[in-house]
Image 1 (cartoon, protein in one colour):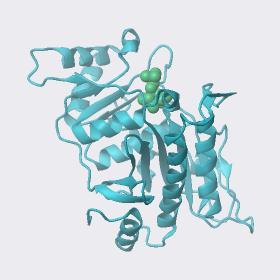
Image 2 (cartoon, protein in one colour; image 1 turned 90 degrees about the horizontal axis):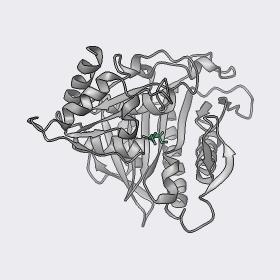
Image 3 (tube, helix red, strand yellow; image 1 turned 120 degrees about the vertical axis):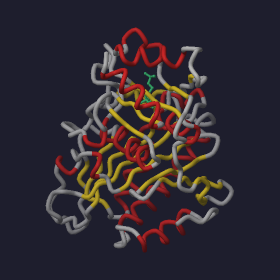
Length: 334
Ligand code: P6P
């Protein structure tokens, strides 16, 4: 049930009663993400004013130059989760290995693990383009009270208990699902509270926006090339349009609201695609499906892919059902 203008805190309490996480731990976990989002938002919004942007002259596990805000966001989210003693482990795009969170008594009885991309699209920060945080939450599969293990993180996306993103754009929004639909909350910066602004978000059945980096066109699989030409064919009944921000959270969010498809295929430079399965594609795919969309790796459902490693990459196509279905038909037949 949704009540517009409800605060995120009120929404969590109301839904805690009626949903699976009545224990309150997942509610507390979402609340810790809410707090971290406000802190990161404050820094992102003033990045241009202080010496916090610009390369930090270090390289992350992906071989990408880390912006200072990457580090900062990573620390803020990890500390917010650690300090509340809610999770037993965290994996992050900015950390080579997962982090085991041991409570004071060393045997950690917490049952959730969190995987996070603390600041996706960070290369856009110094040109004032919106960026985002993406998170994915699972129940641990290893024995409670023992140290967390890699298998707790290498779970299929269909096992997620919650997933969401924060988009630091013209306004700051927190969008998330716990498997009962997708709801969007907009931050009122004057009072520092998130308000339910987009209840029960659903993809429009049809869409006309396709999002892809066409600079890589020559390297795309044949089916993707055919789909792009299909969208550009002016004899089409639908007038398609291309929109690409280069920030996954922003491109996905616009397409979910307006109807569209986001595509990041494998290329000769990224033979398994560029996006990471565990903390980018799985959470976005969970939200996508909960909003009535479809998310595939070109042939299979993203949420059914069996992960092999923490930072594994995968081709990613997600959006309005009719558009993904058309793309898939062209990919399978070419
Ligand atoms: P390209 C940002 O680095 C990111 O991971 C996604 O947010 C974004 O959609 C994609 O990469 C952009 O990649 O190669 O088009 O610049």
